[in-house]
Amino acid sequence: MQRSGFLDILDQSGIDDTINRVDLMKDWWIPRGIYSGAGGFDASEENPVDFYTLGVATYIDGISNLEYYYDYAKQQNPVFKDYFDYLYGTTLFKLGEELGDPCALWEPLAHPGFHVFGTKPNETPKMATKMYMEQPSATIHLDLQHEKHEFLLDNSFEDVDYDNTLSFTLPIQVPTNGGGLNTWENESMKEYEVDNEYTKHMKELDYSCWGDYGEPTVIPYEAGRLFWFTGELVHQIAPAYNADFNDRRISLQGHGVKCDGKWIIYF
Image (tube, rainbow, N blue to C red):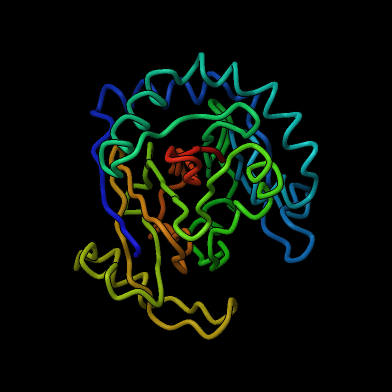
């Protein structure tokens, strides 16, 4: 059975502190560029878009080079735990309370990391980034990251539940006129939808480049408020609406697999 919900994680001081910490780690930001189909993500002069991840991500690095992902995770995890100790602790504790089973980091997998759409501190924004953020550029997909780690998980735990995996997003910074998650094929998501200009604009966009997709159900994001779901959900990072040139979209991203009664959380 699919479950979902919102959790209040950070107040404004916690949001500001996290933004500051993400910016302080700018040298760890990994440039991603834009999605280029079977070639994955490409950061180049031909794709001059300010899209970064802070941390390795299974859906990018686990596809192209899984050994690189595991090796990089060993380097980044101690650093990330030092910088984001409070954020991790609060997020995992509240998620565990909500889910009814404890959540924990696991060293072989990369700890939750960040999506960053926008510039590094003191850099000039690129016009291409604003255009990219305003279009339905992100893939429409299911979260199947766990498949890349099944061999490792199956050899490390006795009871692994792949039928009810977990995904969550904690927005840290949201574009001025809104941000969120587009979903399809799940009526239960309509309970989160808000009737406003942002939602109306999302429903007017053309998503046919990704397949036979009509109007989405739009889940609005609010900085400091985490959205989570279990099971399979067809979804997409919702575009920005009339974005300011200096807008950024920063979010903590995580996934989970329940192993021996405990949620293993990773990116």
